[in-house]
Length: 215
Length: 219
Image 1: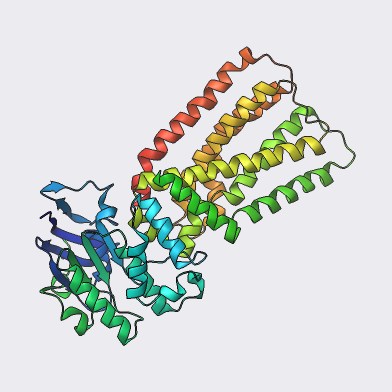
Image 2 (image 1 turned 90 degrees about the horizontal axis):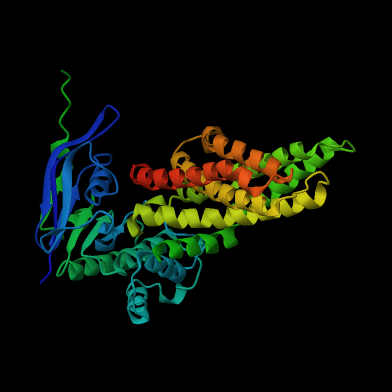
């Protein structure tokens, strides 16, 4: 079976003079659910962005491999699904239009059946042709899961996955996380105990906030 | 193909939000009207009208072309784009959109200008067309790259023309010179050097853009 691996070595991030975290070693070698935890401002989202290759670390190296071969940074986006409060979809398009545009830009094909299943699963089927502008924050969060899953990515990054969701929405998310973790790597960054309870290992970012000693 | 899909997304978005088109149309109408009012009954020289033509185009481009990246940044969709496509795809899609916008905008300006200004008479049309096409390509490439740089800045509105001016200056000076020559029955062969400058400018800008965009796009 094909497998994806993420390896992050000695990751340090500094914004200006402020140390976010220092010398983090993190790796995901097998399918499963991995957690990243820490208080507000501890750098969970920054760390996620670094391991997805969206931003660069100040020091350290991140590598992604598929079947033992390094994934080209230009192709990495097709291996990744990402859900976060700061991922914004286009308000002027309907939910279906958003997904269609994203898929065409990615250059991937999907069946209408798969799209319908996802819309059904996340409870948006009846509103799929409405403009995203008219969606509530919880509905937008549900749509982000469809956006993250439609191209069947091998690595899923969920930053605060249950934010803005009601109880039924949370249940859907937990069900999705468990299903996806059978065949893919799922990384959750959260403070919610119920989110982190799903994870086999949890990286506590607070442990990597050592003060910079000035020479 | 992915770049074309991004272009289609931008076009559909523009047709719904009228983010750039409205400001471009208003700017063109207002600028040409101001020039017409300020001239009044005075006769202006042919060459001055040629220079003013490119002034209108420069400032119109400054009012609308930054939208390619600024609108994504303002709406917070930059990260979404980073998650679905490579930097090369993003730049190609945005460039294609700006190319279409620049050509559409400048064709409208040229038609309006020749209808309203008696002094703007092109005698060597093929020379003007070559200059117009190469110039538009240069404006689109340079303004797309600069738009990607200024999108993350806090004072986008003022920074865009300030940063664009030195980069577009060699292009604008050459275009004004070529327009003057095309109004002066200059033969095509005697303008080869200026046309070569335009061609080189376009090649240098496109090469520099694709080399630099990776660094601009990723933090």
